[in-house]
Image 1 (cartoon, rainbow, N blue to C red):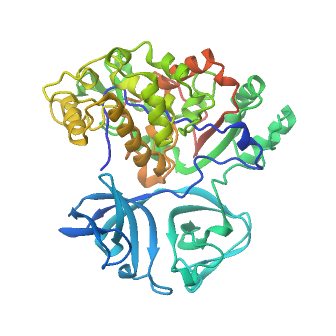
Image 2 (cartoon, helix red, strand yellow; image 1 turned 60 degrees about the horizontal axis):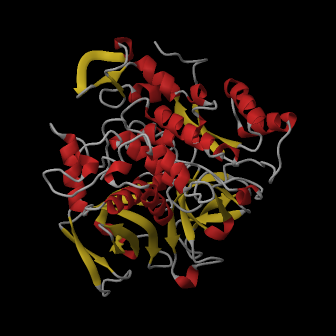
Length: 485
């Protein structure tokens, strides 16, 4: 299931690395673990089992087209890749177990950047007994799609393998030969770069000249910040065309008519945004500054500075605390799900901070809460639909709603490579086919709006002095600049 949200749709994902990580020779772009995948049950009834065997205890039964999250592939053969010899370790509706892969269809993979730590073979399946498909050289970059587990007698130097995309080939490679999250190029460990060193670093990263002047300004003000360039491989014009389609990018009625594409509201109070407005908010260069850079951060939990005090400052202007949504609830949820509580608070403030049945517990459905407006779309009353969704999830307390929403956001977005607010708004890290799909927000200004809120709170509590890391995307054939109407 893809989650869709209405109103001010944005998602704050904080890509922050602590000082300890700075000691490493290179930075990790986001949480260094293999991504998950999603798939759908193919047949009318499928068993989820306790282990990868048809004789194992049944954990639960799933109906046709039920979506599952796939965490790893488990091979039951040394040499055969047939679907009957491969199982998936999955989670669904709070339960975990194993499903044979021939019972799952339409598998969609996340991806994590990686590089070969040494020269190594990659193979047709997970395990040393599978046929070799080629050799990857040391320091070659590629994409990891999913964790895989071989049979023990063929594991090689590690019981963990990765399903990967090396060039155009989908293959398997032993994890002992792989460094996950390897997208940063020799950022000196713990060292503040001089102006000259920073110039070299930007060139190594591949930042275009149109990015460099803005980065120089930030480096001068915050020399302990780090940056990574992510080349999307996507044409600017192609991405803009997709993001400009009806109901993909919206602008609120409070903005000038010149910001709109057409005179018809596509949602109550919202119009399709003009292509010029979409281009401006899609262009990363417009937000490489003190106020907006935070849209390029990751959302992992950093307890050193994502404190209750910082979270309280984000919640304070809203009505959330009035209805029992305390900073402590967000911090506890963030710690449990490894999601930034700052992001969670900013998301709730944008979605439901103005009050209403989603947070006051007084709807016709009884005590039910949905501070993130998850499932709030479709029909004539999308907010009510969100409450129906929350009731089905059992979110009858503020804490359950925040923690449940955090877990869903982590599973459905962060593990899919959408680990920054920008990537949540513009899904350009997962290839051209994913652009304008699986995007948390339709509000074209969402990432910008939330970065301002975060910037103000971080500034108040000195968080801007932390060693923050930002991943900034680059498109092919970008225009020289973009402007609002």
